[in-house]
Length: 169
Image 1 (spheres, rainbow, N blue to C red):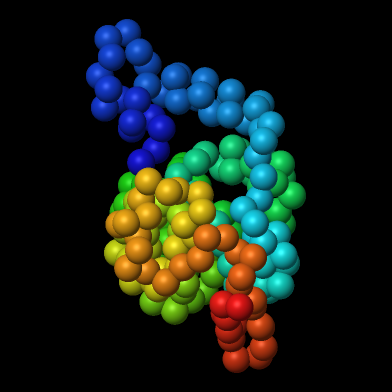
Image 2: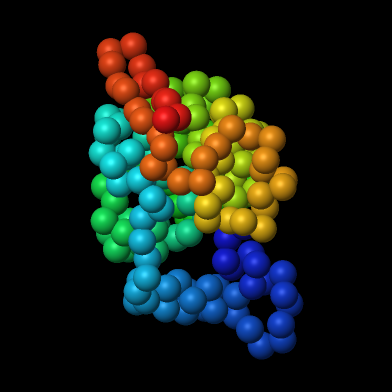
């Protein structure tokens, strides 16, 4: 769910949801102290062909780009952010749009997620799910039925002409 929707649902008198969401986003863009890549993510992404992966986020694009930069991660060619969709996660729109921009069917995609709403969105899009559990411990039970890992350290990727193979080591 986008920040403006969350703020608007609070129905606070005198609060302009759009202005408050913008203020929060600007504060988050300015403060990236402590933003780090999830273990192994940088190495994992560097092996993937740039035209084969995307980021789908509930964050505004400016914030997503700032955090990607702060974490030292490669910037993907396709980023689907809050302003690119009408309905955020758990709706599938973001994953469907990312698959379309990558030129693939969502059913042929593997979604890496760390949040329940994202898992629900990926499933609703028809994608396969892989849970990264180390960032969101409070949903561990709900997400335990999915294949996953704590972070990307144990993942190995091999890319060849016929596709990408993911291995847990």
